[in-house]
Image (cartoon, rainbow, N blue to C red; front, side, top):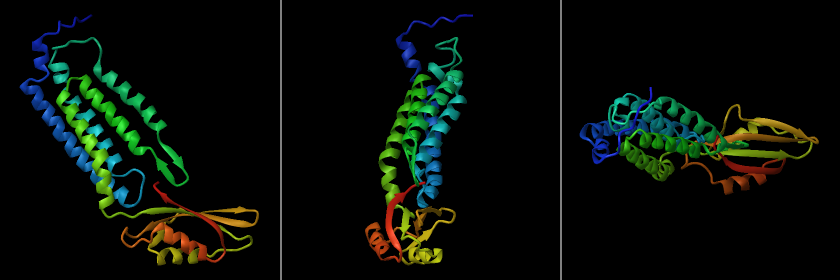
Length: 253
């Protein structure tokens, strides 16, 4: 059976901003705000430990997931109201296709290099943008605008909040020792402890190249206030016995 779309009219436009539909948009907005706050709370734990997926990533993903879930409960309000704009296409299948397709796009912007992972927040913002498009597509214009505002606030201001909140910065360290020199692991731990860092258990890897050992590990600061700046840490590395060369970089994994 084929459906005919009614001719657009002023009454049709009014339906998208009717009292009941605005109420639904407000309910969706409240759900989005709550989900964002809860996602930020969970993300802070990851951010505190120096992980790549921090408050912004968790907040955006949680909010976008809530948006897709809550609009499913108000399908009768899609397209300006129940049967106002009848269609022969199942919108839920269209949404599934969008979510699946955007997942491949998001995966393409996530990059890993050594102990660093980049692009997670960009991927989360892309997915959130696709959900904003879905809200616009089903006629939840007010909710779409409010979600866009929340995403902007999250992207611009939450990073400043993360910098202000207590956190433990992680540093990826590579030490190349002199040939035939045998380093003592406890000495490395003592050196890290004396400068306000703890070596993360299970992060150490050892490589032997032409008789010289190369150690790679991640050290996490006990607190941002007590951690030694990387420039001073690099100076201390030059004084460490048996070190031929080293490489330091902030790590987010």
